[in-house]
Image (cartoon, rainbow, N blue to C red):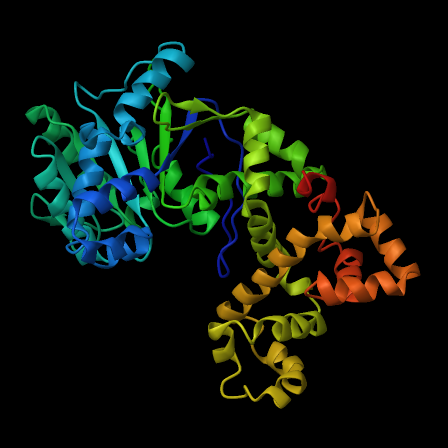
Length: 443
């Protein structure tokens, strides 16, 4: 699990994932099969809410049919979609893979927690709670945000943990399971050790924010109690899993700290947890090799590396490089176009790129756009290296410097940036060969 003393800095938030302890099980749940089932059972106007969590939490009442199907399939085994039935599949995982680990109960009841993304407003969380109460009449719910209360006391950051414990004790008296619902308030200074199942209902998110949420389910149990925690990632797109991004980012930070390549760092991380996939037959346990192959086949690694470079190396990016990246993106990126504040005439873009990069270096839309360029560069580096018949970045740049025809062809057909710009990023250590391992990326 992630240590509670993970490092954060004031001002610009910076997250450094720490060690993960044994007893943590990540569970990937693909919502795709439920979407297909819902299309056969619900009116067509509701289909628009099946694309991502942001759309669902924007108007839970319109998405009520889908949410009800999800709750029924995941907790009751309804609708004959076994890969949605996490209670049954986790029972299978405990029995077959975890030496018969028992379900954790607090004085006879189970305690679970559901986290929704930052776009989930207070009124949306209230609507989700109402829908869940109707779908699960034998379950208690506690909603933790600034507009909710328990026994007449309003939730605040300083009393949230205390009030939730009170709600849990009340559920013990009722002998009813309890589900905690939250967005941001319970993601800090909130330790409820009986939480064994923690659910992520969000479309990715900053790794430091996701790690904070995970920590709520990873509080150590009292001595003598064997706790196996299950972090369930309910994802509409298996290639954009919050879990994948967080674990890769952890590996990235280990690789930087220990000066090892990212593949070795990934192996270190993988040795500290289990990862499972809910399946239509039986839950699947990922091996290190298969999981590594999976995330390399998706765009996850390029996305995480691009994000990490922006997070850690932003101030090291030369302004002329930022200016070149602006020119790569401005025609396709509407948000970036706003950065130009009316200076969008094509004949002005090139002249203004340098001044724009000077003026707006802390603009978040700009950073996202630059991150997109870096992702594209990282994805294409293995192909560029193969075109040069190179095995390493050093060899690749050596060949490009001696073969201007190669460089010209690559700039025309492969690279969004000039090869001289790529070399500059390499010389500055921003495209560090330990991090951007072209042999690993080209698997």
